[in-house]
Image (tube, rainbow, N blue to C red; front, side, top):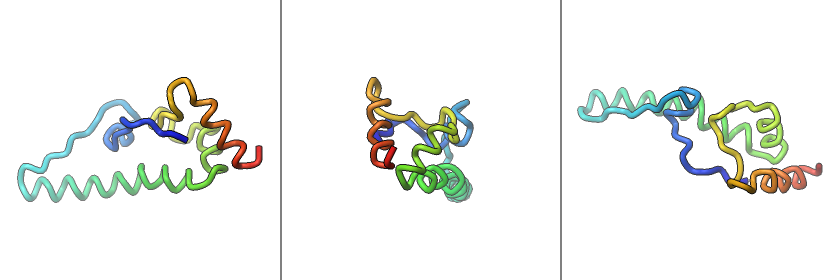
Length: 92
């Protein structure tokens, strides 16, 4: 499965409604930003990777639309082809 670039953590955290840019102009702002980034990585990015660690996991996440519009599946024009390989790998 090819996940297209452009899925940003800030967009994932807001369900694609907006994006977040973190401030690191001062040490205090940077620490607050990095703390928030670590929290969002745990909540969003790691949740995605943990849920899609196997072919069956990818299928379940895709069919249930678990991550909504946060993830763009497959290469343009080849998404069904990419997913078909995952179904085959899972034995379907």
